[in-house]
Length: 247
Length: 363
Figure (cartoon, rainbow over the protein chains, first blue to last red):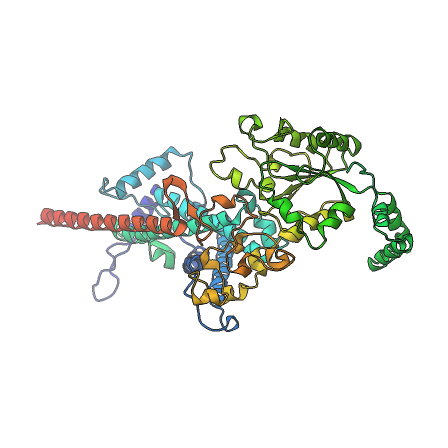
């Protein structure tokens, strides 16, 4: 992967310094690589917004808003909060599924968040390097086209595993309302074999929300920081799909 | 209680019902079930010849609240269930026989109705110290349970004790009280959880088995679907207040007087599978939520160990702390947020320093 970047940088170097317009202004050619294909980007943003809706509505399911006045028939506050949660949950589930399917047809970057190459020594060496970089022990970061090894671990655990856990426990809890003859219960009812008392499933689902809050915090911070510190585009890459190397 | 070969027919004749009425009943039943012309005589034949189902009712570690509930059944009356529908051959709490006579009935039923009797178990066996925490007839209860289970047709696990373990199995469970489905694995077991189960649910399960000669349809956890497939919450008469967002916040506030939803007061209705909100208690008079107190989830697994009955969010007891998911989550998110801020600050300082260094070098 590093070789690829180096080669790209090599080939693109010729472009640097070529005049861009007649006024003598020099355009600076920078190596860019197309990393995130459109479906990956769409999934990213749909999932991000769904997760925000899910976190807010989920919090208010656990800790409801203050009581509203008037007749029960004239209000539907909790109903709307739960509807938002269920709707966003189903959207997240569908786009998570789309994202998995895209891993089969997309480029090799689209598969990165679904595995950790545990058997490769080189991978772990680079993980160590990344840890040292974040601990301020390395002066220069390494460049990666896709996720760096540490980011790959974070994405696999913090996004793929956590979200999968939330989708599974979420549908299991949803099946409590739809009943034991529903497809949700047929597909996800096995969760209650692990936790026979659904109160535990609620608690774990709740803890999962906070785990995602922690992941989102780290994810956003790392993206902003690396965008500045690693001399490569991170944030705009998830909009344009292209990664730009600034040096 | 020895005459276990009685049939339905002999019992209803004894209660003063004529043979003519009996046949009218059989024809009516066949007609209302939409069966063919021969069905009436078949039903009559079955009721005349089929022996009543013998039931052995055993008591392990328990408080007898299941029996207390059972004898208050209104539909059907427990008198009809015990005296007409089943042949309750053994129940050490309410039977007349005692001592060796009582023990002899167990042997007799085992020999005479091998593979035909129903074993109803109230309570559970403690396994610690070789089962010495529950001695019944001079033997550990677990041995007696295994012995009687071997030749039973099916087993009913009455109440939270037999189904899940209940209070004697709550942490740290010193006697190692164990739900019966972990001990008997080769027989169909119907769990009828609750502390106690609703009387009508208990007699309803018994009635189903003897009427249809088979077990009712069970859910994934072995509970009869007809009584345990929905949560208290799904059929609660206060549910409209839940959907509207109207909650009791204090036991004596206006919302409590208005009968709003007890969700915030820790009502376990949303996670408890039982028929309380439809069948209700004491002949349909009321149930806990109707009397203003939240459900404590007594028919759920390990309900004693799930934190306070009055908390919405469950306390998590790991690491020696008692905090709920929100408190732990907020602490974790706060710690990570602070770490991120600190990391960002160090990054900024370092960057500034290296820039100055660069500038020094260049100048």
